[in-house]
Length: 388
Image (cartoon, rainbow, N blue to C red; front, side, top):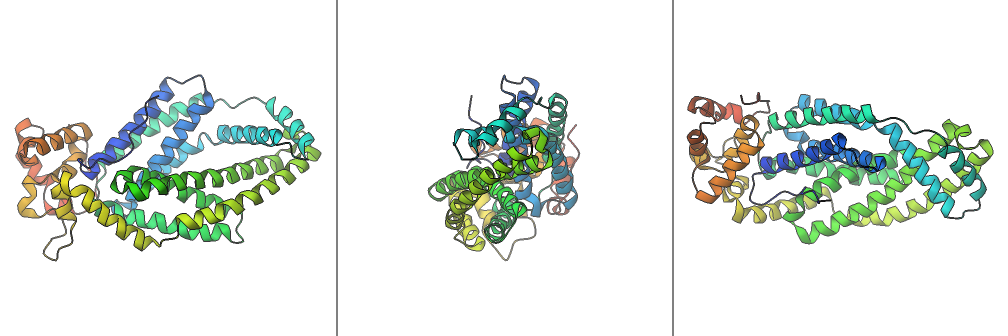
């Protein structure tokens, strides 16, 4: 299976890159829903990961999009994920019991009985849920293409990245303290958000981010294993008869508690190593590497990223607007990803202004384009209707 390209590219505007990743993720998931494989569990996993990646992108952009847009899409994606929760919990319980059975714990007899009893229960039918999720993903794709982002380039993602990193550190302290299952699970959610966000940003600072992404992958696996044990624990307590009765459940709970204590001992040093640096320092260093990464491929982007007292609220100086490659960011909500990407590529190759290329191709009239580029339309979060 071909590996998905979920990293940003140095030679594409930020918005173009984000929408390319969104399209790639959604197209891959929708295709799997339409043409499922022989492994139902793998299909569910792929779709759930897609939803998580999209929610991570949405959270990255949260500070620079409207509150209404964020809440609408976040609720849509969260609801999509919950459609598969019953199937996911059943798979987790089955896999965790299989792991406990193979580990030869002293509670092995109870685990064996529970595994045999639970394995005889039927699996929930998810075909309708998967079809609905496919529709949800397509609606999210349309909404994200129409989304108006306040700011561009690094200024558009720096606030969100800083906040997610900061929340990782804060939730880690709560989870490693006298926290409950919920505190550990909340830490895991933010770790996953950061993991998916840094995967997109890996080319910006490979030396640091490659190691950090690998560390986050290991950390989320350890926290995820603890969460799987917590999910099984809830299932055992809720329906003991499903797992062979109270005696078997009591034995399994003892094994679960022992394993969870060991996992927490492993996650603490790993988490503290990854999040040793404060969010302000991490984001400040990222900013410098972003500028260096963009300087050659998109000089217009780095010039607009550098701070200046003379600039207006728009991230693109008015005098150079028509010749700026950053103009693609403004027209993308109306023209869509494919046309915007084609314009950006041609502008980079030929050196011709984006403004002139759009008019030449007849994709927008001069009046429509000038209206789109008015300062009040470029500096405030809003949504644009699809181009017709």
